[in-house]
Length: 349
Image 1 (cartoon, helix red, strand yellow):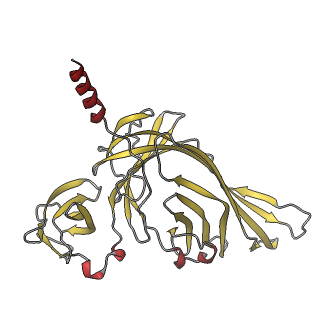
Image 2 (image 1 turned 120 degrees about the vertical axis):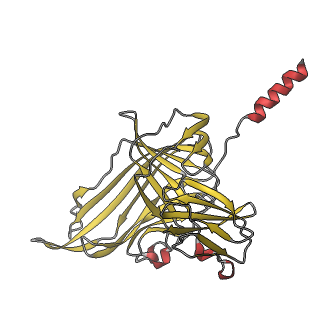
């Protein structure tokens, strides 16, 4: 009898899904990550807890966008952010961040301010630590960041040339309150959920030419949003960002909108020329041919919403039939033996 009890106990313990911890993001300059957005609010967040199941498989892609980090060295204010290794935006106006094994940290902003026709920057004296690695269930933290610009000379109507100063601060509260499995329209993932509330204050001050007169507050562009953001993190290295993000209003007890990674791109610039994969013709009518010096064995096709369509073998003919697919844009994922190699966008005519 004792042996039966021990067997049942062991079966129960080892049958449980083990919670994960997220070590870091595998995000690099040149990566392109595609995101879908659903504003229907059709998503059940569930209460905090362990070994939960979240089903996002029925979400609709109302609109799509993408994120692609650029090299800080190519931007206007690069000299002020030497510790940055990722920038988000354009070479003319962007934010600067540092991604290490320990944390993902926002360092500030810089670039051309079109409305003032000047170039300036805000380097955070207290950087904004957005994520601390590893992420583990039960983690909680509060953080504050702040920084201000150098004095900016602008020409103000009637008043003439004036000196302004910009400031930025962020209050961030984070709590990893749940773990489990999430099903997206693309696939199933083991995830950690982090609840986050962020308050930002961006202010403008008029500086006096006289040192004994304090700056005059002109206004702010603050965000005192009372909604919560729930981010879902996974250890899948191809995702590179939070797998999904849901904005929730605790005042109405409703999910407002959600976004999720529909198709994680690969940084083709980092693949040696000798191993690059060619997929042609593109656009295609009946089939595409895959040529490569690396061993490509399998493929998956996703539609423009990031939803899985089909999978199959590339070998032995290195041709993939697409004639049966409706016209449109698709994503072709290519795999070697037990590893993802490359993604390509193809157009079916």
